[in-house]
Each structure stands twice: as C-alpha cells, then as structure tokens.
Image (cartoon, rainbow, N blue to C red; front, side, top):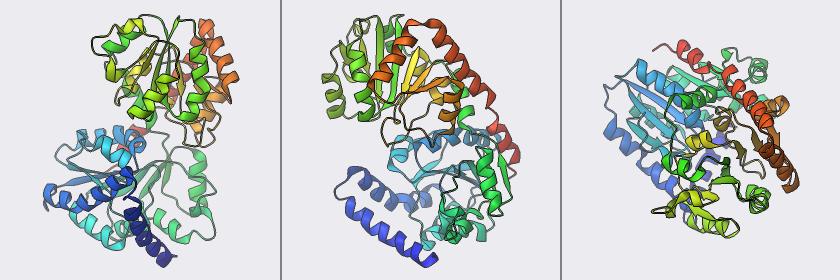
Length: 410
C-alpha cells in the first residue's frame, strides 16, 4: 500500500501539471508549489522558533484562526508558517496577517516531507480538520515533533476504519493528539486503538462568536437596506439561483435582497443580473449611485459576507442545493436570524442539529423555498423565534479554542 501511494502521488503530480495547461486554478497551484522551498529558505532562519499551521483551504483556515491567533498572542516571538493545499485558500490568504510566510504544501512525497520539515523545523504543528498526508505525518512522527489535529470529523466509511486502510491508519497515529468535533468521531478513533483523543467541539463556533466583538457596519449596505426587511443569499451557486430567482422576481418591492455568489466573475454575475426583473446593482458598479433606490444588490467582491449577515433579517446559505457542499451556516446564525438551506446537508452536523431544533429550514425546490420565505417575511414572531434558536446554538457550543490552547505546551 505504501508503494502504491507513493506511485499515486508521483502520477498525480504529472497529471496536475498536464491539466494545469488548461485550468487556471490548477496552474496557480502548480506554479505556487515550485516557489514553496524558495520562500521558506528566504523567510525562515535556522535559529527561528516556529509554528506551522496547515489548512486544506479557506474554510479550514477560518476554522483554525481562533487557535492560531491564541498561540500567536501567547508566543509572539515565534514565526508562523501557514500552508494551504488548495489555490482557493492560498490566493485569498497569501497575505494573512497571522503568518510570517504563506506557502503551498508540497505534494506528499518522502523527499518533499523531509525537505519541508528541515526548512520549517517547527516547534509545534497544527493541522485543521481533514488533512491526512501519510508520508508527511510519518516523518513528523519519526522526528517526534509536537503536533495536533483540531476540529476533526470522521465517518465510518473512511479508509482509516476499513480492513484495507492500514497505511492511512498509520498516518493518523502520527498525530500526538486529535481534537474531534463530536463524540462519534472519538469513538471511531478509539475502535482502531487511537486513544489520545478529546471531544472539543468545532472551533468555528468560537470563530463566529468573535464576529460579534467587532464593528460589522458597512455604510453602503446600510444605505442599500434603507431600514427595510432584508434577505441575504450567501455563497450561492447556480443550483441555488434556480431556487430563489423566481421568488425575488415576484417581490412587491417591500423587501431588499443581497446576493453574495460564490463565483464573482463578471460573466457569471452579469448573467445572474440579467435574470432579475427588479432594479439591481452590483458592488462593482455602485460608484455615485443612490443605493437606496435599488431592490437587489449583488456582492461581486470578497471579504464582506460575514459582516453583511448582520444586516439580514433572513438568510439563505448556498451550496446545499447542488453537490458542491453546504457553506458555513454558523456565520449568519450568530446574528440570531432564521436560515434556509438546500436539501443536501447530510455531511454537516450543525445543519442537522439546527434543522431538528427548527432554527434552520431545508428546502427541496422553488415552491418550498417560496412558501418558507413568505411565512418568515410576513411573521416577525416566527423570525424572532428561529433566530433565538440559532443564536443560542452558537452560545452553547463555544469553548473549543480554550480547551485546545490549554492542551498545547511548547
């Protein structure tokens, strides 16, 4: 299995380089990985004390950030190396203030693992949620480097828990300690005799709770909303658009709508705008415009959505209508508002819980979406009740960061 894995990594490297000729996103990753070792050689000196934080992509970075910030506060003289596997994470956070150097994680070969660790020489390593790279973790274990995996979620159908998963299982044992989001993940680890595990919960609860401690005001959103009821469609995909566009077009003008699509390319946002009958404006074209005179605002930029949710009376969170994966419902939940999502949410325990608590509603088609929105828009008590449920859920589940930071000893 070890040999097959190594062959697979080298084959993947070749395929990625080939596909990068035709895919801009993959090309960024291929080019970025070429620069990893050069950047580390330049920024990290042999006598530096270092933390290494690794995230697959942007979502994992946001999940780990409260822990990263806590460590940086407690140990300000340590340099931070932040690595990503995905271009979507690296490109957005390549200038992250938390880090001294941000790099792509090299592909998981034995040679790369040794060279990376030689250059970073981390005093402590934190992986977030999913990233299990066997060659790297086996080398970390061999060097007896201090490390943890946080906010981990495991499912029984993963290879670690199958008869054929010995090699991947051995990689898990490269972690000194694993903090899981739930009890079921802990039990799965204990069944394969991994004992150094704690249920800390999801650090995202701490992350979104911190949103309430900052100034969330946005002048142009305030002008657009104009004290009217506001619905925010966050991180939406084409499958989500098919559900809500008719509903917006039927609006009588008493409600304001903000759409923050996942894809902000002009070709996509222009197509979206062309499907809307109401008066619509994009972020990219709002200069010298009277925003209060518009009904729909398309946020064709990044960095605002978590604050925009503070202006919402109702939120629809995208990703669940198709197969792309549900986006973060905790971001709007912290502001105490009702939330709608698509029908695909099985891999998201927070969605399951809040649906059972009746703070979140799953809609399967346009009719069910329109029915739910009509009820929420017309009934302030229903909105308030569901919002209280969601806000309370966030408050009940905070504390993972404190538990994790208490565990860390440098």
